[in-house]
Amino acid sequence: MEVVILPTPAHCGRVVADILARVVEGRAGQPLTVGLATGGSPLLAYRELIRRHREEGLSFAGVRAVLLDEYVGLPVGHPQTYREVIRRELTDHIDIDDPDVHGPDGAAPDPLQAAVAYEHLVRDTGPVAVQVLGIGANGHIGFNEPGSSLRSRTRVKTLTEQTRSDNARFFDGPDDVPRHVVTQGLGTIGRAGHLVLTAFGSSKADAVAAAVEGPLTASCPASVLQLHRHATVVVDEEAAAALERADYYRYTLLHKLANQPH
Ligand code: GLP
Image (cartoon, rainbow, N blue to C red; front, side):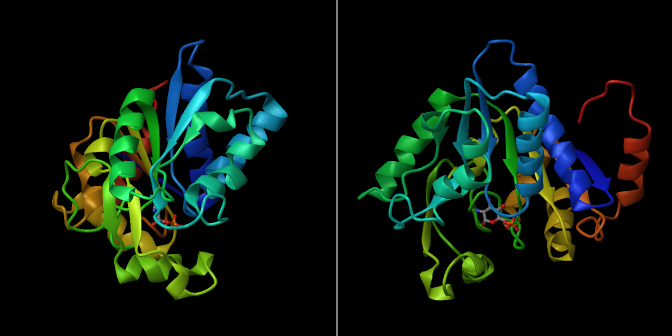
C-alpha cells in the first residue's frame, strides 16, 4: 500500500485525477471500466477531471463507469440517489455516455435481487481498472459497515445510525435518510486492479489510521486495502494526523524512482 500525504485537499484531488486520467489516456482504444464513488471526498478530483476535459481535451469517450452503492427506496431521479449525484458532479460534464454509467437499482421492487444483478453487472462490465473510494468515519467503504465480511459480494446492507446521521446533511432531515442500501461487497471492490482511497480532515484521521496501520479486521472494513496488491491512500495532513508511520510515507514519496507511478 502506498500512502500519499499532501498539504491540502486540492493537492489530493489533483493526484486522484492524475491516476484516473492516466488509465483513461492509456486505454488505446481498449474497453475501460472505472469505479466511481460518491460522497464529498472525490469531488475535487472530479472537478479537476472536468477541467482537464474542458481545457485540455481529456476524453472519456467509450469509458464505462460503475458506482459503488445506492440507497434503497429512493425513487429513480431523486436528487440524492447516487446515480443522480454522479451525473451532477461528474458524468454530465464529460463525454461519457450516460447509459455507460451503472449503479445498483435501489428503486427495484426486490432489492435483494437487484444486488445480485449488480454483482453480475460489475463482473461483466469490468474488470474495473481503478476504483475510487472514500471512507466513512467508522471505516466503511462503499456502504460496507463495520462487521462486513472481507469477502462480501454486492448485497443489501443496513446503515448504522452514525452513517445515517453523517449523511443527513444531504437530506431534508435525518429521518429521510434511507435505512437500507445496495453496496458492492468488499470482495467485489477488491477485484478492481487499483484501489484509490482519498480522505480529508480530522474527522477521518482515526478511520484512516485504522485502515492503513490497524489490524486487518471486518471491524474496520477499509483495512481490506491491506490485502490488495495495488492500493493507494491519498490524504491531507489532517486526515493523516493519526498515522504512526507518516514520516516514512512522506520520505517514500520524496524518494520515488523516476516514473514510479502511484
Ligand atoms: C458514504 C458513501 C461512501 C463514502 C462515505 C464518506 O457513506 N457510501 O462511499 O466514502 O460516505 O463520504 P464523504 O466522502 O462525504 O465523507
